[in-house]
Amino acid sequence: MRRLFQTCAAIIGIIVAFIILAPRTAGAHAWSISSLTLQTQGDALVEDLLLDGATLATLLHLDQNGNGLLESTEAEAGRRALLTYLEPKLRIETDRGTCILQSMTAYAVEGERLHLARSRTCPAAWNRLRVVNEAFQEDAGGHTFLGTFHVDQTTTGHVFRPTTAEIALARRPSSDGRSEGDGHPESDRPAPSGFGSLVAQGIEHILTGYDHLAFVISLVLVVTGLRELGLVITSFTLAHSITLALGALDLVSPPARLIEATICVTILFVALENAVLARRGTARIAPPGSSAGITPVAPSLRWRPAMTFGFGLVHGFGFSNQLRELGLRSHGLVKTLVAFNLGVEIGQLMVVLPLFFALGWFIKWFSRPLEAKRRIVLSTSGVVAALALVWLTERCADVRIFSFG
Image 1 (cartoon, rainbow, N blue to C red):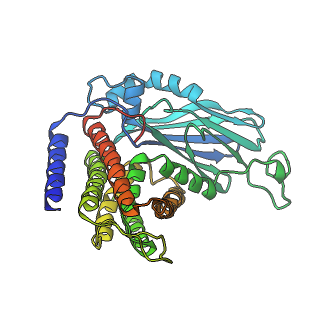
Image 2 (image 1 turned 120 degrees about the vertical axis):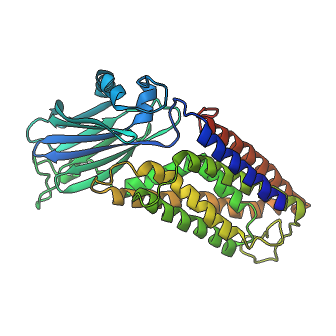
Image 3 (image 1 turned 180 degrees about the vertical axis):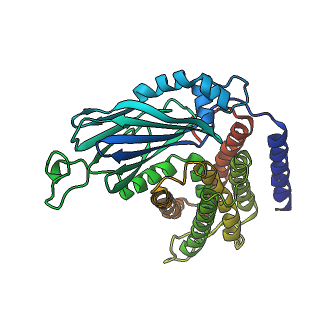
């Protein structure tokens, strides 16, 4: 075990040195995030965009000095290209016609993002609103586009992805059950995408967040029963939530590249530790009536909840580093984060619980269940460790080897 700790410490040291010495290359970065805020002013709309600078620099070839960032001079030189790109990608229509762009009130680089504010005029007395946002969907590295919509007295959140590139909104209904505007019955209005929709988006996020899933699956492989499973998952959830809040509020701001690379190290460590425990420990079948029918491949894993808490702090920063600059000035963002994080935890349980019980049931079918459990842990850990090394290479060198992760 001491050798395992020494190996991982050496890997972390190499990562830190690489991040300090290696230049950043151009390219779309994992976990890149942009946001759109839309506010009604009578029949008109005020549109506020915070666009990820690195993604803009790559997709629109604006990075003239090759540093992987969007600078003010580059943004100004690429203004026409950006507006031309956005025109067909971001479309806003009402039930009475299209909302037309009128004026631009802001265009400036703020940190790692480009702030773009515009106004739109819409046909009079509109009732329903349809927003289509397909910007940055060609980013193979994955891009999250958050939306916040203030329609009359109602605030709605949404996450734009290739499968959810459109949202339908409606004006607040009056006391007689009809929407303010043209008097259509409330039953004709499309349901807005609010808290429940953001929870669903969080579930989708975790089910397609393969690095996070690899870490959680590795944790589950060697737990002893429901009590230990609860301790491990609770430790991870609590830690993840703490650093998500600290990072989003800009109270703690560790370097994003270091965090993303360290996430891969946590996955690699747990996978290697599982393999060592499987080779040294002894698996056994629990007595009948046990919660899952299995005990861990190692005699003791008392340190695993504490280790999971520490690693969970790192994973929480991985998401918060990108959320921090999304304009906490935007009303309703706290609700968006709470709903989305709740969805992440639900999605996590959707994976963890079936896997936990399925593994206990599956090994009972073998004539040598102890050996079957050991082989499952070893083979799964090998795959996870290999994936972690690939993701570590991608995040340190800014290259894309897989289309996921």
